[in-house]
Amino acid sequence: MAAESLGAWVDRLQSGGRYCFVRDEAVRGSGLSPEAVKKALQRLARRGRVAKLKDYFYVYVGLLSAAALHGATQQQPQEFQVVTDRPVRVIRAGRARLRFFASRYVDIAAVMEVKTPTGPMRVSTPETTAVDLVRFRSSAGGLGNVAVILEELSSRLDPGRLLAAVRRVGEVPCAQRLGHLLDRAGQRRLSRPLHGWLESRRPRMLPLRSGRPFRGSPPDRRWRLWLNPPLEAEA
Image (spheres, rainbow, N blue to C red):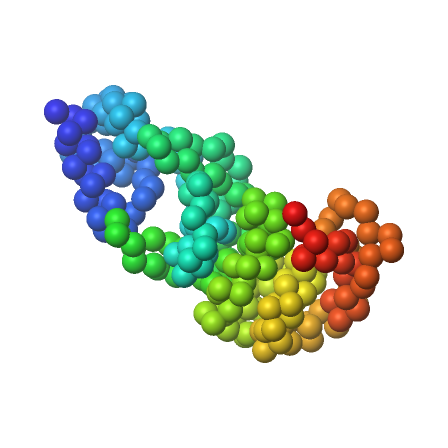
């Protein structure tokens, strides 16, 4: 009966928009003893109802999963992507796959509550999502895919909030690549504040794609990038 009692408590927690908890909360909330909670959690984990992570961490839904929740209709991520403040291994709970991305900025990132069929979730704002997609671009399908997502999200992005999201991270290369992608999408209204912020930092020329040859590549001098190769040539 302990697992059923704890399972009911987990259901109530989820219906209220909570998707993580620590063991002490489960003891207080379920009315079970610590030992009973321990055993009940083990049984629920075997059923795929819960997955053990860490005791304390900051976390929000991000990247492709956030983009889909914000209306990027072409995005059907094969995993649920979460941003957290420390490394966490990939978790499988039943058929679901949860992948975590460690970021030292997670506790100051702008997030919002988004209603879903299973309750509200803490999700990165469209602006934070745009920045994270560029930062973790290899896990978002590459810059070509990020460009498509940004076009879909552009109507939901605010220039001031986007600049604030970039400044929280403070990564100049991320701002250069994001600005290029926004210009490519015809979104100068969004990229203009980023360009002003970058100009004061005098960024050096960088390859659009790090780790690839760029000698002889055409330049984007506005964002000080070597286009190696342009996005249209990406396979």
